Image (cartoon, rainbow, N blue to C red; front, side, top):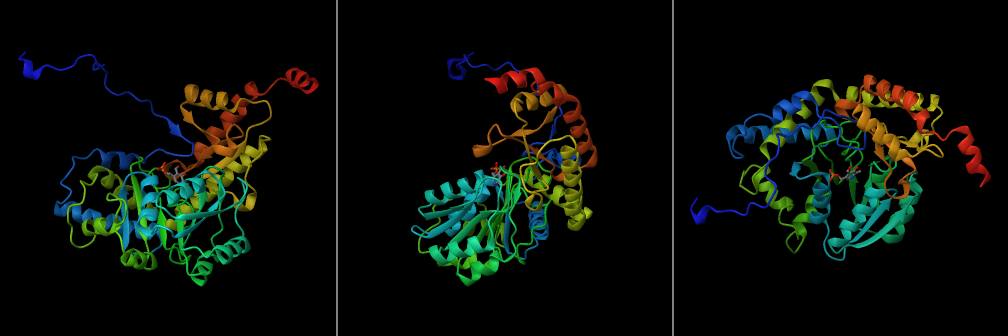
Length: 396
Ligand SMILES: Cc1ncc(COP(=O)(O)O)c(C=O)c1O
């Protein structure tokens, strides 16, 4: 071999073909993708400016407006995961020194506050314990006191299993002349989300939960009030990749190249949204609710305690308190290694305290609920401390 083709051969290069097992993903996400979404992903890519692809882009936008229940013109799937879309809402909206009020009641509220600070916002927070939601009065008091430019909050807190009631918050934001930014990562396509009715100005989500796609796209939407703030900003958006004014030249009528779109991910997104529209949003929401109720009732029948109070419980993500003396991680590893089922552990303040069970999109089915409940019933007793161990523990 001539010297110009010689390479460093010290790296490991001999691998077998990929052979991941089929898992049932009942954790906080990703959830399993629908089989026909996987088929769509496997299609031969077409060019990202091919007229057929341009047509598909419009279909994806229209269907995203449907699942979000919004007429927002600027509704696009960001190339990136939910966090990229989260960052896009902040990067496009915040001007240095803007006051951003973040309502924190779990891990993802903290992430919003961290990101807003990186865009040089003056970040102020209000907090609730991990397992509670904000009342309208608490939000109004904070808006009145801080007078922020943006109120950012999480609709469905994946770290706690809490669904934030949204009624009245949008009206308050209009009254206090503030934009409302909402994380719908664990609610979109599964739990009622009505962006226009709720007067939400900015929202984002992900592909890998209620939409039954693999991770890789972050749906993003921006309403007219947020668009006006973007148009009036004196400086450039400080993130080139996520600058919506540039991205809209590709997603809007001009179709100007911005970056090479992940075309296959958008094939998958189109198929996922098509399936969802075919089932109908009302039926999808109802299915998630009834399967979650089946899970909640079953877990309680087994003597387990749910962390979230009944009226704030999130159908897509259930937090179950790990019983005293049980090694929660060992139990979830047993489910994964022996039965191929993934269940999540706690995050942040709830680390080691709860399991997180996801029923999202394609996985929200009664047969999955029953399978998991049966395993909790048959397998968990072996992980409970025996009566004698408990007595020893109590005496020391
Ligand atoms: C509520 C919430 N927001 C944001 C994110 C971040 O999304 P991603 O992990 O797709 O970047 C997640 C991830 O699970 C989430 O649950």
